[in-house]
Amino acid sequence: MTDSDALELNALWAQFHSVVNMTSQELAAWLRTSSAGEETEEPPEESGPEQGRGVLAILRKRQTDLTRDDIGLMYDVVETVRNERAAGPRATVPEPAWRHQLMSLGHDPLRAEGEDV
Image (cartoon, helix red, strand yellow):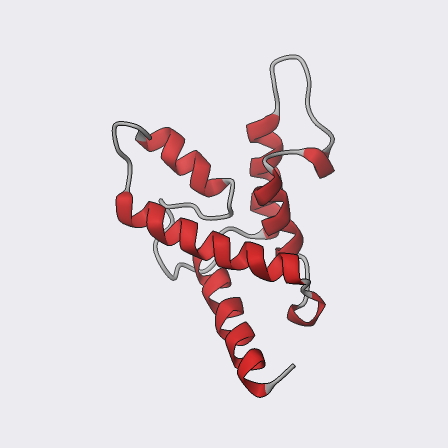
């Protein structure tokens, strides 16, 4: 890895952890809750959408253990959260669904920016 690659990865790591403002425990609990039905519940490792499970896996890793897929997902999550925050709730995605969608990526829009978790 070149110095510029390392700098870019460090910047991405910081951006990702800035937009993902839920802890791994909070996200895991949310993914289990959001995927639970009235009669059944998915196994914890299969709870929630694939992207949410990927975010959870990244939160549990050290930066040196990231894969190319992890890095791609981190870019996607940063872009998605920023775009969704800019768009905000709207008629096609009302507030509760909007918030739940973001929470499935580890971002709670009701938590103040920069608030410690």
